[in-house]
Image 1 (cartoon, rainbow, N blue to C red):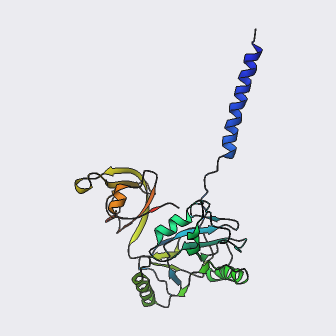
Image 2: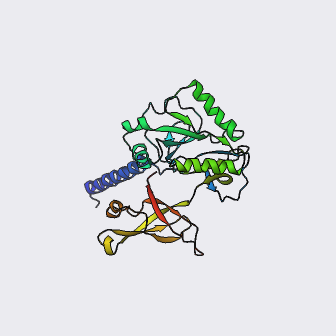
Image 3: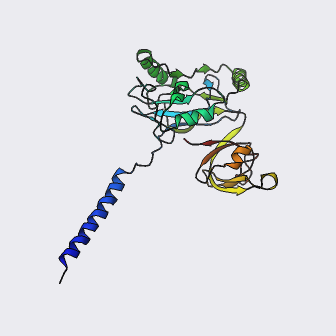
Length: 287
């Protein structure tokens, strides 16, 4: 004979567990979806860019406005104060959240804070593209400029675009930006329609190359670094694994980034096995 009370209780327990499971699935945030944005290739100093436009590459946090909210380059929602995004348009924007040169740590900690603070008042949104708008680059930018001429926002800027007259003009501007502590330049063919992904028509000009790697290991140091981190084991986008051991401060060696973190490092070319040569740590990326 079936014990009615036992069967009823089991059914209640099953439904309760099922309800909790469905609640977890439905209420859990979906993983961020990376926006299909434009990405720059590296300038090799061999390309012919006369007639293109050049601008300073600001060292901040990239901010993508999808017409409704501000996201990181990886699609992670940001939490700017309402006044910061006041009068933003119903169309897309791409820009750099920035304060000043050499201020990356402050920018990153401010912009990625889930609870926006007063630090946002030092941040500006520096527009360099209007994704998926029709026409050439400068025409696309003009749509955003016309919008903000009517819908004012004191925290919005447009990164100046300068026509490349010749190679000497590019060299001169690059040296000027670098002498002021700037990161480098972006040169772009203004005649091209918008496209996502990497392209030979958008190039970053820097004295050294940089790359990002996923931390998969923290290795103990030797000698004076015996009680600290000696190197990080990184995994690159193409699957290459190598150890990064230079460029760290003692403070960072005592509190190194943990596995799962993403770091940026500079390097000078690759070995025949695809290992970055003369690699040196630059910063932890949290966006």
